[in-house]
Image (cartoon, rainbow over all chains, first blue to last red; front, side, top):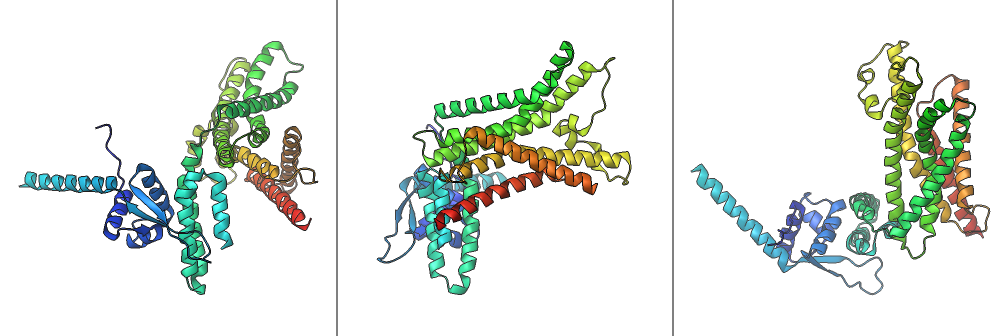
Length: 103
Length: 316
């Protein structure tokens, strides 16, 4: 393997939210995270995750006559789902290992 | 929603299109939607929250701006322009010191004066580099701004390093070389490195007013404040020139040539410094933040000029 994909806690949080809700926009993620994701940094993280190929996004079509910019909705890619599954499996292995040692 | 459009325009001027699309467009879109959906009484709170998150996003994304690739030919031109302007300034500042003294003293004096004059000339040399960046053909606005931001960071670090370490070291070397018999000269705050000033025991304790230690501690604090302000001077001058170059040509408020612009900044700086020194002498009270006050006045004058020019353009 060339390198392991990096996965920060904020990125994991976002992927978990998106797995749960399928598709969300930035502000929704902040609200649903219960304060763990911050409004000022979430968009920077989302941009970085798109660059890494963890997320794909689409712009909400604006109704006719609506003002302002269209919202951007995000959903996880297959790569992000696989990384999340790998992390969870590694966590389970670690927990099981820790329990075995204790016993 | 003018504030959201302004915020987005600001981001577009400073960041590459990809960062704007991926970070600032969604941020502003959510901000706008939240504002539209909010009851009238909550709209100002939505704007405050949106603005705070926008500012945080700007700060968090600023490394992206500093990583902007600058064409090598532009970097070379900027470096050349700064070197020439600093060299000219250094020569003008050094000449009065090298007249009517012994040749052996001349060498030592030049060794002392050169770092000092370089540190003084450098912030003003940055002014002419702004013209090079702005007039460089084929550079996108965010690249030009990224170059200016990098220049500002380099200028602050250079000034801070020169004033904090090189100038005090040159000063010590000169004193040691000229004192006969060689002895350790008394080290005033100006002759100490920034690290030595910060670590000085005089700062650690409170002293009885009127004692030598009290004046020593005050002098050290004053010197540290001045050094910090002087390190920021190139940024203020860069910003002033940048804003001046936004103004159209051929009017009374239009920017002059880089040489005249630099001389005007030097003149303004000297006049402000002289005025504040006069205030200090007449009031018999040293102004601890005098250099910061000069920076504030320079910025204020720059803002007044741009606002005045914009208003007169709207009227026209």
